[in-house]
Structures are given as structure tokens and as C-alpha cells.
Amino acid sequence: MSNYIDKIASKCNLIAESFHLPVLFITPTGGVIYENIKDQMLNPLYENRKEKLFNPLHFKPDIEFHFPVIKKSAFSERYILISVRNGEVFEGTVVIGPSLSYPLSEDIINGIINDARAFFYRENVIQYYQSLPIIAPDRLVHMSVMIFHLFNNILLSPSEILSENSMQTTTSEKVEKVNLSVSQNLQEHAFHHDRLFEKRILYIIREGRVEDLSTLAITREEESTSLLSKSSYLRSLKNHIITLITLVSRASMDGGLHEEIAFSLHDSFIQHLEELQRLDDVRSLARDVLYTYAEKVKQVKDERYSITITKCKDYIFKHIYEEISHNDVARVADLSQKYLSVLFKKEVGISISEYIQQTKIEEAKKLIGYTKTPISEVCSLLNYNDQSYFTKVFKKVVGITPKQFRERHHLMNK
Image (tube, helix red, strand yellow):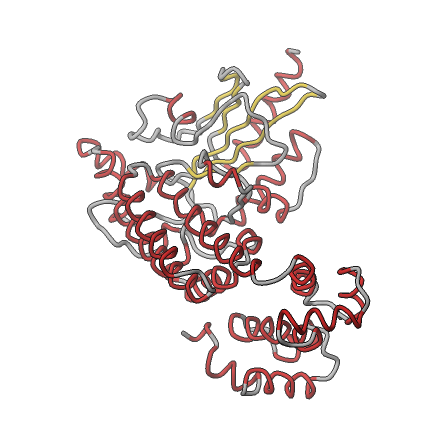
């Protein structure tokens, strides 16, 4: 066993020297068998080293993960956590960090100090945050890929790691109940000053696309958003989330949710938000907001149609980038084409072909309005072989050509 521990220490030392980051190895019982802090000063806001890991990170040393965990502490530091196995035995966790995704402004640091009532340590706290290495989120993910492979000889893709981390939930019972997942964007509430991201979030809520909440790519960090309170970082974050609650509430009503339910949720979430005093609890509430409203809208939309028609619509949505035929949908519904045509038209009001066409054009509108993807490529992606035909269909559904739509609605220019 001593040889294995020596190998762990050698690998930890390699990581510390390669990335110039503090590295610790924690056993499942909480013992520290390797420590290299690389001359990094400790955060004055922590009372002791053990609290540094166990409390602000919600770190439980006896819990094992089958993928690298990238966590944000209650004080906005980033850590990589790697569970290490020796055969069938869970040996412990490698903890790499802290780092920051973006430099914190002095106003944000002062807000954190005020929240922690650490007025006597102000200069030390500012010095601490200014000393932390800045590592972009995507680089942190790639580092975790390599480190996980080094210890476990398993090579995961960056997309797998992002997906797994997005599905990590907190102690919120509601989140656990519906097996919720969230992308890094939602953990950081990056949407507020990213027009594109805000529009995508509101579209997802309005359409009740719960599953899409976990597929958003990383955009901005909360550290890079505007400060809505110079005296308190917690207050600033709460103000951002109040804005989120208001926008999402309106989007849910546009999606068909009864206004009394939407307003009731709106008031309840804000009241709950004001009672919270921990940053991680506030971030968790933001996740509850998004998933609760999306679930409510989805429920309303699903109740409009039979199980068969709902299954058909879901199939069309999930295969929107493929060529979809009437026969494909009938096969999924396990019905004859003729009978399904009658049933679909009766419930939805339009034929299956028209619905497929409208759904593809709605997707085209997102690509044209939210991205810089060339219109010719949008046409190809959605399996339109003739761009002139695509333009004709788009104009029939939307009222204007794809080019005119981009000129009027392109969010990258707003």
C-alpha cells in the first residue's frame, strides 16, 4: 500500500508543478496524505484549512464520483475534484485549486468582504483574490480531463465532463425530485448581460423545453456581469435573480401558464430568495426557478394533447435536424399513416407535414437570429436540399425571407 501512496504523491506533485496550483489528496475519512500549496496564501475568510474544503465546497470526502467535478466555492474560487480508485477500492480525492475564471473587481471583492463581515481583513482578502491564478472555464475542463486520466486511466471527453457536472444538484428536494440538471451558465447566472443567452433561456421557458436547460454552452461568468450592489456581493446576486424571476415569469405566461400560477410562483420565489444568506443557496434557488417554470409550462402544453400526439411532437422535435417523413412519425406512434393524419389534424389543427415544416422553420429562426451560421448552412442543417425552396417555405411561415429576418432580428447586433 505504501508504494501506491507514493505513486499518488508523485502524481500530485506532477500536477502541482505542471499547473502551478495547490494540490491536496484527501482520504475517504478526511485525512490529508498529500499537500502542496505552492506558496499560495490561504483565504483569510476561512477559519481553518479543513473548513476550506469541507464547508464552502460542500465537500464530503467519502463520496466518490466517476468523473472530474469542477466546483465553485461559496467565495467564488474554482476547484477540480478527482476521485481516485485502486481496483475496486476508493482511495480518496485529489483537490486542485483554488483559481478564478475571471479577475474579480475590487467592488465585487468588497461585497464579499462585507457579506462575510471581514472588515479587519480587507487588505488581506483583496491581496488573496488578486494572487489567485486566472484559468478560463474551458481550460479548467481540459485540465480535469488530463488529471482524471492520469489517476484513473480513463479518458473522458470535455463534453462528457460538462454534461456530468451540469447534472450535479444541491440539497434542494425539488431539484432532486425531478432529476434536474443545469449547465455551468445557470450556476453562474450569466444570462443577464448576454442578450443571446437571455433570449435562449426565455425561449426554453416559453416552450417548456426542460431538457434543453442542460445543453447550454458556457458563455459568461457571474464575476463578469455588472454589479447591482457595491456594498454586498450577495445582494448583487439576489438582484440579478429577481430580474431572472420576473423575466421567466412573463415567459411562462407567454407559454400558456395561467397568470395566477405564474405570479404566485414569482412572489414565492422572491420571498424565499430574501430569506437566504448563503451564495450557494442563492445559486441553487436560481436553478429551481428555471426548472420549476419550465416544468409548469411543459405540463400545460402536454395536457393539451393525447399521449400519442405528444410522442409524435417529441419525436419531430428531437429529429429536427434529420429528414422526417410522415411514415417515420406513424411508425413511432404505431398507427397507420391515414389514421394518424386524422388524429393529428384533429388535435393540433394542422397536418403532420405542416407541423414538421413549422417546427423546422422555428429552429431555423433560432439559428438565423441567435448565431452567425450562414443561411445556406442553416438550410443544409435542416435537410432542405434547395435553398430557394427553403426561402419560399420560410417566407410562407414567417412572412419575410431568411435574409430579412436576420437583418431585423439578429441578436448578435443587439
